[in-house]
Image 1 (tube, rainbow, N blue to C red):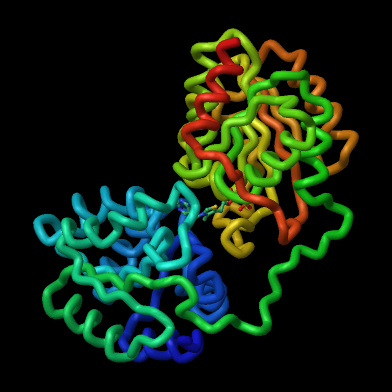
Image 2 (cartoon, rainbow, N blue to C red; image 1 turned 90 degrees about the vertical axis):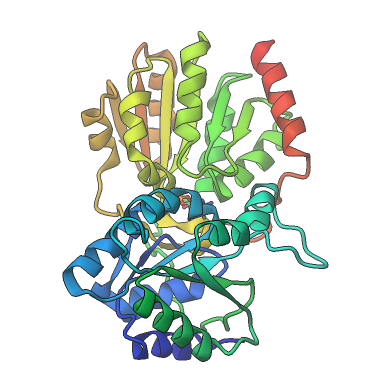
Length: 372
Ligand SMILES: Cc1ncc(C[n+]2csc(CCOP(=O)(O)OP(=O)(O)O)c2C)c(N)n1
């Protein structure tokens, strides 16, 4: 396996002194090391397209090649600035991409449904984009690959990519990513509380990552008391799905969102806030917990205040059970768009199950109950 320290040393030796990206579980410890080692030369981006933009800005001010890192799910977000801005037919700005390969085909491993197609088309994407790439795994000669790609990017002024397989990097032994404020609660009991207080058959659209898995278990335990649609992919779009539903249905639509996800496509709130039957609940643990607990780029943002500016008519901040119960009650009665921010501790159970049913069947079941 590749030692993260040697890998970073090699990047720096090749004058790759700056990085921006969105964290990924495939190389979560590497993302930590980027935060720790690159310090001011590291910027966590709101989304992968924005990471490309930040990289372009770095190049324009230094004429040096930036590292842009992401999970392959984020390629879609990155493609627009990659091909319409950094591309060889436009400004010819070289980027050194490091991409985590979810959904890579293994003999004994099938990834989650949202990663299957993305995993299959990742190499095709890179080929179509005319981006030279190298695949690395635990046994790769990474020093050779980094140098070769970097030299090519510099000479041709074109972007290159390292496509990283699962389990390529050795785990770090010391990671301090616990959020120690014991007074704050964890998300799972709050989800349980919310499900217990929501009216039967409430419609909930839940965000990408562990929140949806926790909610899925809770809903099952409660005999499908609510109708939950899990936005398993399309990170950041749960609120837009809820908006599309709120526009068509004459009932309350709840969206359970995460801070990383809400940040990714924040502009969507200017649209969702116009819908008076929408209740947007943000579970803010200040981190991308699902992929390893890295800091979110928006730790300083007071989302409940921002929600007001973006048009939500009611907005509340909660950090205790009684706040949550009260806020939910008010939102259920309200005739206005409603935003609730819940401040949480980081942390989740290690054995939360994944949905076992086919996504398509879950969708059919969901629509059937919505239309009932
Ligand atoms: C476009 C895209 N980029 C990155 C990912 C990987 N990813 C999945 S969940 C997640 C973190 C979500 O953070 P947040 O919304 O704060 O929820 P939390 O993980 O804290 O529960 C990330 C980065 C993804 N699925 N899609």
